[in-house]
Image (cartoon, rainbow, N blue to C red; front, side, top):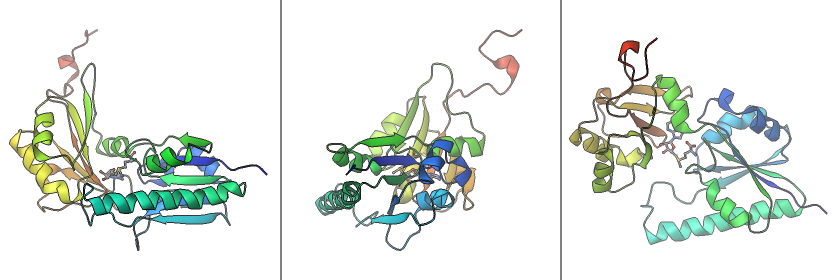
Length: 253
Ligand SMILES: C[S@@+](CC[C@H](N)C(=O)[O-])C[C@H]1O[C@@H](n2cnc3c(N)ncnc32)[C@H](O)[C@@H]1O
């Protein structure tokens, strides 16, 4: 009997219309659809993809043992997550062995900080794994904000808010354009660093970008000290794009 294929399917930042044609077509014929989820929560990736699934497709939730309850460096977290990925891979492999293809839904792009990466590392040893790229969260959020991300020969950095404060500060002192992801409990720390290096005034905060729950505002107008997990901060490059055409660095005609 044929063995199934694993598809890591990027479903974009949340708006179902930002699912690519390729992903939608694949989801329309996938017999098994797996998705990561926090216990008791609706998965964002599932919400974005739901309308494209074929009726009768098996839904395979992969429930995280922890999300933010323990630090990612806590040995209990590391050991529980290792067990979780092995178990999730085993249930996917059981379907593959029956000749079924399995689509694993991923928010944004699967290879950009996605949980799918861990399954990919295990499953690709013995199985065919195909990745369908998706629109990343920062691309979706920058588009909603109408903010240029980076231009010409400038550098663009992605910083996880989970980095130690000193490292965040050192990196934010460079004039690069930056997106800071994984805020949640790290929000107050990140805002403090942005204020210290003088970049808070230009920053934009976006939560649940591109969805019906979207909240998008200048960081200086966000007065509460908390943020949700699905949030990020866009920080423009210093000396950002010229506001008027006559200030542009290219020759004027
Ligand atoms: C584990 S990373 C996954 C990134 C995802 N694979 C991507 O391509 O964007 C999760 C982080 O992405 C960001 N994120 C994902 N979706 C988002 C959205 N719709 N709005 C704002 N931030 C989002 C948040 O910073 C969140 O903590």
